[in-house]
Image (cartoon, rainbow, N blue to C red; front, side, top):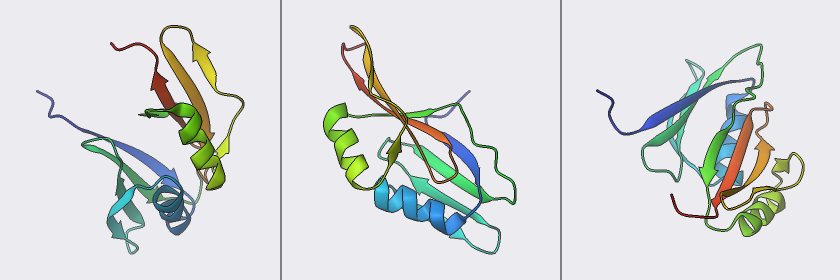
Length: 120
């Protein structure tokens, strides 16, 4: 019934600021931008995973995290921090499972990077 792929959609205050954050700080590719409708989409490094944005006057930050897997969480976190990404707290470790680090986008939406400690 379901096709492979997922699109996550966020309301944002500034489409331009969100595009800049997701392109410049996270390195994602802009695949759609329609200023007239206040909508845009970026392609993430995850196959068939798109993040979309709708400009809105009021934005309530999502506390559900979109999680992106990385090969080395310490190196990835350092790179993102050097690009100006704001992390919330320290990197957490769930022994024999995963390391997680939470950060936020310009609207305060919660995002995470994760490093798998044992293969599933």
